[in-house]
Image (cartoon, rainbow over all chains, first blue to last red):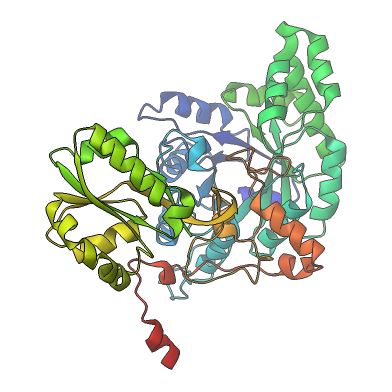
Length: 293
Length: 221
């Protein structure tokens, strides 16, 4: 069953991430694909994540297809103008890539080519509209194309953004621009997430809640201090602290599994998106603990 | 105004290597306000060049350095000083430098400053970039705050995921442009308009370089 069919059939969807490496050695990445194959419903392929130059997401999405993993192609507006983006979307389409996640993209100042010229010719809302147009057989200039795309397009949202109102305005615009599904920034407070979902449920879109496993108290504090839109509550930090250093990761995995289980049992979200960040091998175990395998 | 910054003196001296005598040209407008090309800066530059064993044949602060014809007239009395100089060093913006290039096609012209942006002066010699001269103003739609300039990504339809406690991910010193826009539109009771309008992909054609305009012809239209 395709990712789109799973979401439309109201099954609880699980996605994870494949991060293309810097360089042509793809052994470890292929190993991650093997680990996730048959377990998750689709894998996001990140697009030069954190503005750090790596293998392009289209090539790695194609590798996912070849290795039996359905890709969600992440496309950011940072590195290509509208000609490049549309051209790459057509290319992705003919390679058999069906899902695309439209994002603005981290600024070049966050990455490893700080002197690069940021493009942002268009942004996420406009990219979603462009995908919708391509699906309808027309490019952004209104030219009719020979053959349309058939993308299932999604976007991202930060449910715990502060302030939240402008973020919700953008969410609404993304829905209007044609987003069919959303994957969220990591969430740690289910109560707050429920509040966000009350808003999201006004629209006919699917929402996959994002998860980043806490490995330590230090990591939780780092996220709170440095990562926009992430708020790890004090009680979770206390829980990890109480577990002790050796069991910190194990407790973090338990917390994630517990949250996923709650989202699923209470039908709060349509699925989850697990961002392993270097711990891809732990994803099957988290799924197991959450009762998903 | 055009905001300029003095080039590093070492870099400038490297560029001027091989020349012995200079005519210094400043500007009474932006460069004077920036403290990069008024009378005091010309005097300071003269002193610094002389300390390096160079000769300064003359100095002049143009009224408006980017106005080519006006500057040409103003520089007539300095003809001898200019002809005696190996080259001209311009202490204004890139436009002022290129006025001199146009007027003296047989003489090397060097910039003493780096030109940065179109700025608003908020306090004495404090400047903010608020307009990118994009060629098609959208301030009517964004509560008078330009996201093309104030947002590092130039986003047109709301904040990115990098907004942290209302500040920009690029720098905690910058307030998120879209939080500012949102707050202002809320205050003006124009939120509905802001939320319901999706700004289309921008037409960048009016910003394609180099741009020329004949204002008197535009008037006739």
